[in-house]
Image: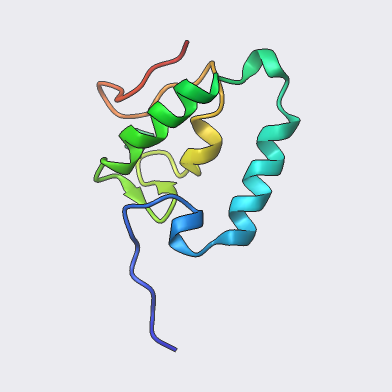
Length: 87
Ligand code: SF4
């Protein structure tokens, strides 16, 4: 089987549907007050999608699945300076 190359894309787009579903389930367990709004979430992920550190849904700077990290209000992007910041 041919080895898949990392893409600058989120989990679902990288073909990792099972992990994308697990991350979505994890986000759903977060208390609402600790989650960003849908608007902020999608804005954060759009920034990740144009970042060279994104490899198949994982941030190469911190090892997080960006779809999970971006959902948390208290977290910032790990880059220096951060691309998106805690709210
Ligand atoms: S460095 Fe920041 S913007 Fe880039 S992929 Fe990681 S979390 Fe996203």
